[in-house]
Length: 193
Image (cartoon, rainbow, N blue to C red):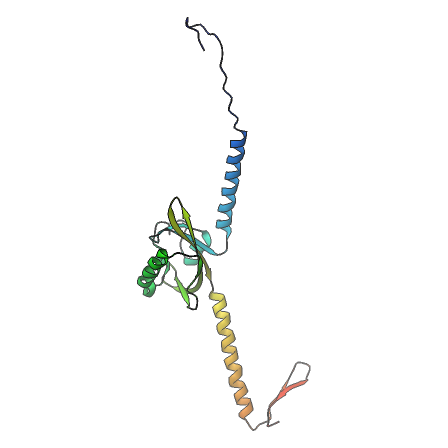
């Protein structure tokens, strides 16, 4: 500083302790990076929508599952992921949900379908979570493509039906039918045997 004669008279130092602020800033940055990594590497589809159903966040698994490129879904309505025939109904369900939001599985007891970018549909499971930020409600959804499970369940049902038909044929014939395992041990036979 200078005295009244404009002569350098001294120096005033101000010291502000920023160690704690810097530590908290670094911790916040690490936590943000971890959260982003969790979202980006989650194998399930994740999305966040606002009250109007606008997609605000999607992860790479969701984009791939529905056939979209990075960032293409942002700003669109979540209804683009719903099959055409269910879209109008979905908008009503979404509005009803936002009147009484709750975290829960979606569509319990019904077969939910997702709509890919190319228009193809596939079976999905959806779980909803609600959170509030800056005075606004948001919904996050976890979406799982259950196509493999559905195919497996269909194969089991088909196999059971085939086994029942074969058992009916075997039991109704007068011819001898004997079943053996690979070691030649008899494990079944019909009345004709």
